[in-house]
Image (cartoon, rainbow over all chains, first blue to last red; front, side, top):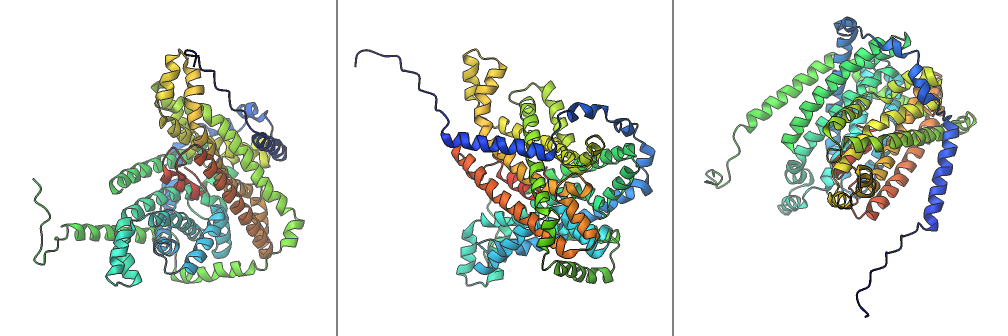
Length: 265
Length: 297
């Protein structure tokens, strides 16, 4: 204890050997993946001299804002999204209750339904669309099927987490009255999670509108069908017009849905 | 002021008024919306009843999957090509979005920079990867590079948005400390902001990588590299056992990557001393939402 000393600066922590190994592996993989992918930095400046750019302008608005050309398929997209959201979310309601440990009738059904939904979710959305187009034929019908599967997968995951986190006390109270499984869930859990269910449903609807834009690229109907056709003729001005229109529609729907969701939750 | 709930004859609180009518209106609206929508979808009773059978038929014909045939056609390589595309795409998106996020965050950037950068994120998010790939293919040619670039550009939108939210959620103390030592804007970003957001942002990148693996598989369907092209060509030939093999391989790889990445994310976030579920700038629901979609927001 000889007077106040200036505290020595703490030494800087050095990264350990494990960190270096991880960094090394990541860099090696990145270089390898870059080679495999054909990484080519020149693209970043060649992009600007893309001969396609001049094909994007001017946007032919009288063509885009035509019922037959664009607005009808856009409406179809909307219809696909409505049906898919309702079918998907409707099926998701009972499934989510089965999947959650809080409300599942028994452990086996819970594990089986969870694994099945994980696998369903692992298949990319357009793979579903392509498979269903092959199964039931080209058109909006296949598209609404594919999006239903997709909404179901998203909704089940979201909503079952809500059910997992639901307050167990009302459930216990309902069980204590000697209620059977379904009435117990109906009165003990459903009212507490219903607002979130509707909020997620609206969110899934937004996602579906976005997703159904690309569904048409694999023949599943909607506005994507028009985009694909115009792209094949290199009419990128029309594609741009459609994209702008869709952008506006998506934003409007999003605003409405966000406002409703705020009120709900 | 409070009068308490009005009680009925049996002592139970009276049901709130107007609920039944509102419920009826909502129900009617839903039924109308569905009815109208179905008219547009070329649905006939015949098709509706036949569809599950048709789907099941295809599903059944995929078994047993023709793994040997698929392996011979190099499907394994294609699946991994999808992973490579997703990795490079995520890196491009990550490296481009991080600096932009600093320019978009409300607490560290002035409004005249912030507003255009945010709009840029919104516009990018609105264009699907598939459309981007279509535009890029004439420059890069058909192949994985078009896919990687498309994913990279699209990722800038979401990653930028999430990172912006992370920056806006920081503790302002360190910023003040840097300012007190006379640091400039760049140093306050480097020493005041970056250390705080790095764990969250890294886990966001991993998250996006998971989404991008699915996206890159899809991109193959229009010729931008990866496993999608195999699925399409096998479906065209109606070679369902091979389709089954392609699907199963994709599912296995996607699930494996999801699991590993989720574990790493959990480790990163726990290391930062945050709640396990807290991934995207503190909004757990947003994180979960994005997790599942495959399209991303």
